Length: 289
Image (cartoon, rainbow, N blue to C red; front, top):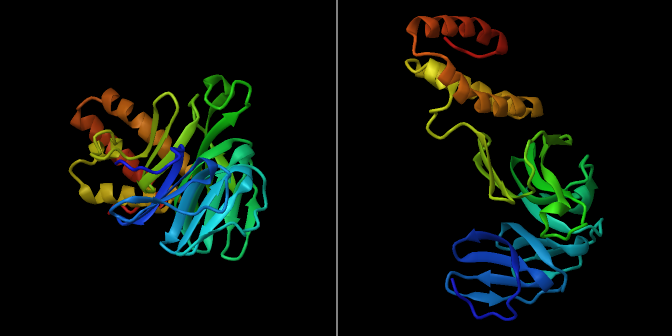
């Protein structure tokens, strides 16, 4: 998609409320808007670099950036009269609604907006947070990496691994990962289908394979759809509501393909396994009847 807007600044973030209402932000305070026909340059109240943009509607949009910059668009004009509680760079923003917005950035900074004011949250991390996404105010993810600045922003030597933080509605905690590259962005279609991407072509996926082909229980209970549904409900409604449960789900889907390959296509063995598992599941609250 071409446009003739000058200067040709690097654009860092994009968000829209519809196909005819899209905002893009970038370096030196650049803000663009697309109305479905063309991109236009909007009047910006700052010259600071802007990294993220998100809104709850076309008339309630926020942009964040360097030195703790927070801008607000009311449907008519952008303003910079918001008191920010930090001077750290803000690089990501996401929210559930107009009175529940989160922004993350440099040195582990995370802010929350409650509809009245912005305040700093305890992130329990020093990582630089570059992307945020969630499904509710009790399930939010922030991704990034640990930056030491020695070799510059674009040097892999300046980053010491990637990080994923998770907020359960009470506190932020770090989810264990084994990746060496920083992560830039995160998005999901649901609690059990989440993707994160980063440097060195890193792509992470959390959740169940789309076709169920690598799900051990899907294979074990291939002739009993009701049991599979009960197990999925247990995963989504119970395990997926806690940090430990999410780790259990992630570990399960990592091991599941190997278990499927190890267990031979032996009906006797499969029957024994099914009976043993059926004995355990009711104690976990899984309805298998």
